[in-house]
Amino acid sequence: MEKIKSFFYPMTMDKAFKLGTVLVSAFGIIFSIVFFCLNAFDTTKTKFYNGYFALILIVMIALTIYLARFLLLDKEWSYSKIYLVLAIGWSICMQFVMPPISGADEVQHFYSAYHCSNIYLGIKDHDFDTTPGSYGNWIEGTSYFYMRAEDYYKLPYIDVTFPYQYQILADGNWFHTDDDMKELVQCYTKPTQARRYLLSGLGIAIARLLGFGFSGVVFMGRIMNSLTLVLAGWICIKLLPVGKLQLLMFSLFPTTLQLCSSYSYDNMSILFSFILLTTCLYLSQENVKLHAWHIYLIAIIVVILIPNKMVYTLFAVWFFAIPLKKWWTDVGKSKKWYEYTLAGAFIAGALLVVKKFAGKYMYILYDMFVLAHNHATIEQDASRAAYSMYDVLDDPLGTLQFAWEGIKVDFWYNIHHVIGSELGHIKLNATVPMACVVTMLIVLILGLIINKGKRLKKWQYVIIGIGLLICVVAIFAGCLVRFTPAEGSERIQISYRYLIPVYMCMCIALGTDAKEDKKALALILIQNVALMVGLCGTIYFLLHLRDGMAAPEILNAIGIY
Image (cartoon, rainbow, N blue to C red):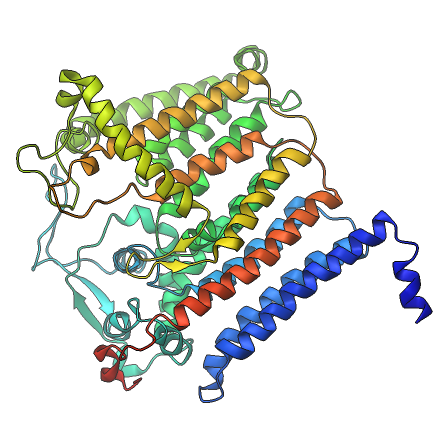
């Protein structure tokens, strides 16, 4: 009794801090255990079903204890070490809470990633027009690629069929597949460009080579995407001169975790946007010596952004956040002539590529990016299919006024979604409790305010701000066609996914170079607990999504219900 009393009296700031750590951690752990016992675990289900949810709970508790241990024992910690553990752990949790095919457009993404895995395995398409000198064409109803029978036939059963999706995956084949289901069957669904799915396609290819079953295959492709968030964030958090805490926090927002744990290629846009920012800020430091190959590195990062979301290539303006004087003193005055030789070869190669492909693909670029045609999937006003550059030039003020009305709606729509209040497929709209979302947002803002230290120079803020501004303008300009639906038709907002790289890079740039301390770790712990409670809320939503409704008839085919 005396020992317990001595802990509380006399009460010091250090003791109060540790007491708060215990209370916050205990709340998250106890809440999660009680929630899973009352809602997720089911004695009438199989051990695999209960083990599925047990894994989520164990990882959540382990991450909380891991963070609390540093605060209670006053152990040294680093942003990179904490990031690595949390990113791996929460990616696993998000994979299971929002399993495959629950993400936005993930059915199409899966088919495309599977098609990419065929390329890795040397399996060719059928009747795909690859005539030299022409753009490849997929002939509807004739062209097809091959899928393993188990993967092809079972995919529809997990297409947004919550809460039954959990049982189908948990009780499915993970590490083996039946011999009669290994046969290749024809899939006539048109895939998207394989270059967008190099990582997820590699994951599927590895799973197929290892003989994994359907559950193993669909998760393996997503795991490769999650690993990119882990690896890219870990490297960037080591190199960033400012904003380490903000990178860590934004990476653990539900929306970021969900997109980077899905088959969507939005993860590439998010990752390479903050990789580009990190590279430019790292090279801008006085103690970092520049080399000519750094220019090639920046160019390669920008090029990688092109096939994913070309609009983010506008972030290339961040190159000028590196003092131009440094290029002259470190590179221009250097006597490393081989760097100039490589530079000449690089420029010559770039010009050759432009010359070869510009004419071939110019019509595609014009149609997609000069706003000459409508590519929206919503019904349009017959009198004007879409806004084009000609409309902008003829009536610039009228166009801006009309666009502004749409932007106001889209802005708040995006703010509401970008942190993670809703996740996944539009038919699903899985929710995260708003209180948890607001808590995480407050923690992010507090980190910007109380984490004192040196910030970027004012002129660097101007350069980064210009990059962010022109990107936002380009996003809204490129979506002008969505502001002209026919009266009474559905109005589709600009996807919140487009703005995540903008918000994330803005938060990183506004951060400081503050070292690791208890305040920063306490904020991370609070966000961790908020994320625990938030994902419990998401699971509850999904488990009760079809309350009072009959199970989908498609499940009868495999004897689930």
